[in-house]
Structures are given as structure tokens and as C-alpha cells.
Figure 1 (cartoon, rainbow, N blue to C red):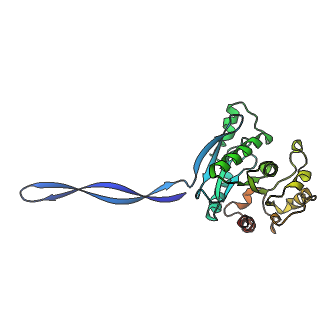
Figure 2 (cartoon, rainbow, N blue to C red):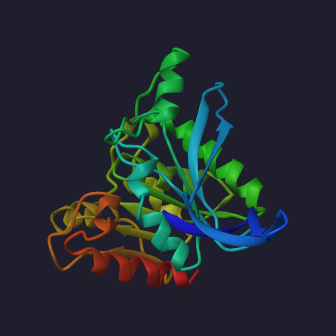
Figure 3 (cartoon, one colour):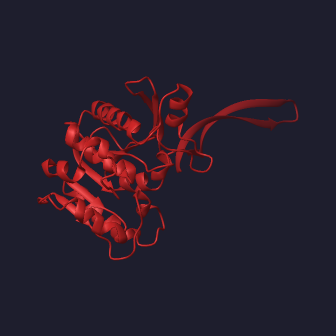
Length: 260
């Protein structure tokens, strides 16, 4: 939460007395108080099948580079609480979405998931593709720019597929991807054609699998597989505030983003 200071006009009644009469005069003065305000705004937009996608928008301005943040399985947009704020501090607008394949984090519901279920829609991982694609197109139009698309765990693979298919994706960040979806084809074969800037990372123990996934891909100067020295973590939770080993991820991903 950020504190914002707002001026409030207060009316004070000042009393003065004399031997003959009591007189009242009114004076106005300006005071300030601190009011708690969220550092994000809730926005909503539609998927092609009428499901309403809910997102947290962490906006600096209308011109800074903008990242669309996609969560991992059983999670929601609040996977990026703390992460989006730090990205803001480093000059990036962020829109963290609820995908229909996900769930609550504590008391925070996945509102897209709830809307999809209410409308009788399927909520598998693959069903979330349309949420990610819709978010890219909506945010690209909203900010009048191409976006950086970011995924975590299952969505980290979907964002790679989306980056290959969607011209509104400028660059892609993928935390713990895998060739998870044979229904879409071989990611190992398809990613060979991806020439956009790409940052891929994972927990240390997952790195060999990702290296194997990239075996046919010759990485260019704007494409990185980052392997942490420490054990690390699966998905974007590697960047959560006070996460063990988180700073080496932050240093690597910010170095990538700042070169775009």
C-alpha cells in the first residue's frame, strides 16, 4: 500500500467573548491527512467466449514499457503482489491477470476462474490460452504499444507459444517452462523460430530440462537461459519479497528488461 496525502477543507468555529455579547466567527483552513490507497487499479475485459478477465493494473504512466503478468497453477494475479511494485520502481507498467485456470491465494479469489465456472466454461490450462491472448491484445491497445509477456509454470509455456503467434508481444519472460502441452505441438521444435527477445529461467534443479527443451534453438544476443547458482524456485515465486536467493533472479531479469 502507498500513502497519498490529500488536502481537506475543514471549517473551524472560533468563539470569542466580550462583556456585552458572545460573537461567533467562522474561519476556513486547509489541513492534510494520510489516506491508505491501493497501488493498483482493478480492470476487467472480455475473452472471446464472454468470460470476464479481471486484472490488477500497476500503472506508472502511459508511455513506460508494459508487462502482462500471468500466474501459475492454482494461483491468481496476486502471485505478483510485491513483484509488480518492484517492476514499477524499475520503470515498467504491469498488468497482472487472473487466468481461468487458477484459484484463490488466501482470501484473494481468482475472479476470472469464478466467472468462467459460473458461465459453464472449461477451466483447463489450455483453456487459459484465450485469457492470455486477450490480455495481450487489450493491454497493447490500452497502452498503444507492444507488450512484454511474462509467465509462471504452466503459463510460462503458454506465453512462449503466444509470443510466437502474436505480433503484439515484443518480448517474453518465462519462469519454469516445459514442453507441457503436446496438443499444441513440440515446443522444442517450434521455439526454434522464435527470434523475439526471450528470458527463460527456473529452479536450479529444473535447468537441465530447459536446456534440453532448447537443444535445437541457437540463442541470439537478446535471448537468455538464466540458471541460478543457488537452488532457486519454481515459477515467478522466485521473485517474491524476502525470498531466499531472489536477488540473483532480480539482477538477471532486470538486466534483460533494461536492454529491451
